[in-house]
Amino acid sequence: MPKTIEFLFDVGSPTSYLAHRRLPAIAARTGATVEHIPVLLGGIFKATGNAPPGMVAARGRWMGIDMARYAARENITLNHNPDFPINTITMMRMLTAARGTADFAPLLETIFAAMWQAPRNMGDPALLAAALAAGGFDPAPWLASANDPEIKGALAKATEYAVSRGAFGAPTFFVGDEFFFGQDRLDWVEAAAA
Image (cartoon, rainbow, N blue to C red; front, side, top):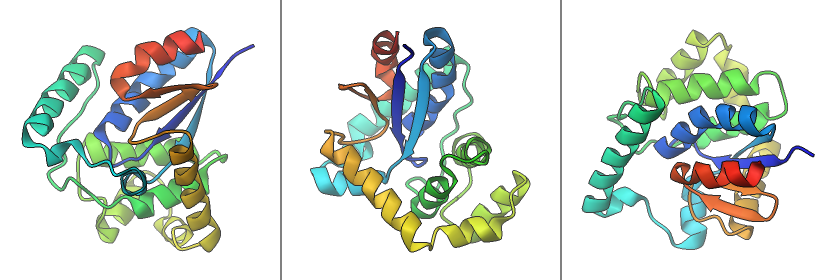
């Protein structure tokens, strides 16, 4: 029976973006289904006492080099966003609202592209709206969804779920009871899914 790869991500994480780009090939090779679960990375950090890698200068420099290596090896366009870090709460709420609909994949693609391919400050409401419109979306209902109490609650619950299962950052993956952290562990994710 095909397995499910739970992919817990935040669009503000460039390593989540790299994982997003690599997961379709893994799903094709293994027959697994990828379940995208939007979470708030800041909420996970707060709940677990973790901090962004860039808080340690040497680690941040190394991580930039490491991500560039993965992007080059996998032929993925990855550009540094000069406005990083960006508050992603509105985008993550919109993606939570889109979960389970036909709009989810194209909306996620639009947001990830605007964050990491042709980077702009997606925390700016005007730039976010422009990116949505360029992606073929009417920005108004999506921006409104970010203020819906049910959507806010659903994103908070997904973040709590991540923490309850041991997540301390993004991307995090679960294949059944197995836990994996980081896009650089996708070989282990693939092995578990296979």
